[in-house]
Image (cartoon, rainbow, N blue to C red; front, side, top):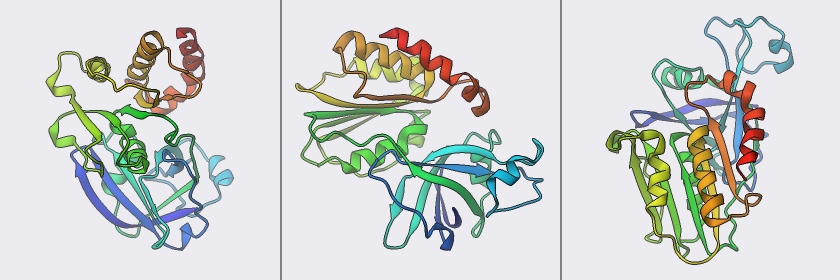
Length: 264
């Protein structure tokens, strides 16, 4: 499946929104998950092929030709116009996905598999807590928009500074708390400290915490020790790891997750 770039907009100094459309999305079937994602394939600049392509065929090409897979959350799927919105976090020239988004032009194509997902807010919970960094903003935004305006929701988002804030729909009971790395002594603990300083409402709460691996793990430990949460029903997951490429993180992620289970 593939989409053609129809719109490009700059959301912040570190995020670009790209809207995909076209006949290549005819088979797209939305899921019930608010963190639904697609596995996109980014082609090296010197590749001898372009979307659409047979994945198994190009995977057999040399390392300088094969596509690089990256997972991206669906920010929005418009079933009327059949257009797909994906927000890309950018880090200059680093990486494949962010670099592609920064150079994207109308008519460019992006091939992917999916969507799939694993989380949607539990409406039986008394209130909801969601936290993460730039990599989780799309999933958190979509999740908050699905929670009734009459239900309490606490959201913690860590970004570099005020200029990196992203607007999304919420109500007065959906409290969005932005945390700035530039304003704290230890950016690695900024999200955890913001959560620890918050007075929580009474009742059972639904949890969604995704982002950088070590930060997510520290928050996970905190909730296990202080709130004795049911870890099986909570959605707590590392999207990436600082100082690791996507490939390097994938190579150790299974063992890292196994080690994390020892925190319980």
